[in-house]
Image 1 (tube, rainbow, N blue to C red):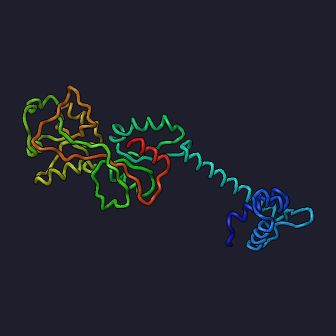
Image 2: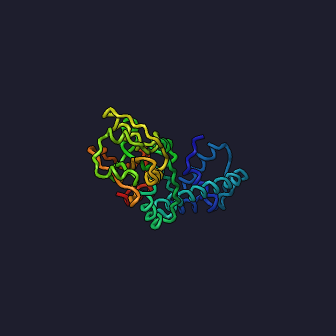
Image 3: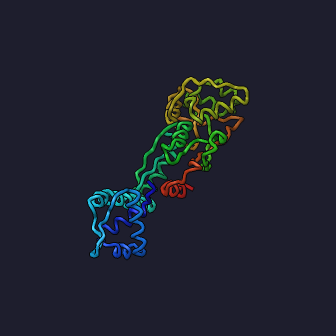
Length: 292
C-alpha cells in the first residue's frame, strides 16, 4: 500500500467533523481536496469508509474501525512531537556519557553538577570504561558522548569527532620510604629500575607510558598493576612502589612527593568525542558548550 500520513490526517478530520466541508475548513484546504484524499485512501484500503449523503458523510463500519486505529496513532505521533519539543528545550530527555573513572571524578563531576542544576529534567547515565571500551560503546550507539584520555589512533576512529580539552601531565610519585630520592634527578633507566605501581595495561594512560619508554629502548615491568588512579596514590603512600599518576588528578599531600627526572613525559589531553555521522542531541550540544 502507498498511503501517506497526510491522507490519514484528512480521514481523521472528516470523521471527527462529520462532513467534508467542515474538514476542509479545519485543514485549510478545499473540499475537493478532502474528497480526493478520502477516495485515494478508500482505493488503497479496498473499503468504503464514508457513506456520503446530503446531510454529510457518515462513517461506515469499516470507517469506524479505521478511526479507532488512526486516532490512537495520531495521538502517539502528537505525543512524540511534544516529547521532542521538550527535549529540544532540555525540559526532558536523556544523556548517556561514556568516560573513565578518573576523568569522571576529577574532570566531569563538577561540570555535570552545573549541567544538572540548570537542566534537572535531563536524565544522565554514565558508563565507566577504559578508553578503547568507551569509544567502542560510542561507535555502537550505546553512549551519546565520550570523554577519553588522548591520544588515540585517529585513523582507527576516523568516524569520530574529537575535541581536545584539558592538558594532562604524567609524573612519578613516591612515599616517605623513598625520601632519599627527593633531591636526585632520575633518568628513565633509574625509574624503570624502581618498583613501579601503574595502571593496568589496557588503560590508555598506561599504553602511552609504555610506548614512551619503549622508544628509549626501556621495558617497564611494574610490581603492581591497578584499575584505579586513586589506588596508585594510596599504594605510593604506603611505600609499595613508585606510582605513575596524572599530575592534574593527583591529590598530593605530606604522604607523597613527586620525583625529579631529566625527562618529561609527553603531555596528553582529554578528548570530547561524538560520532561524525550522527546529529548530536540538544543535551549533548549544551554540555559541550558548557565545557568549552
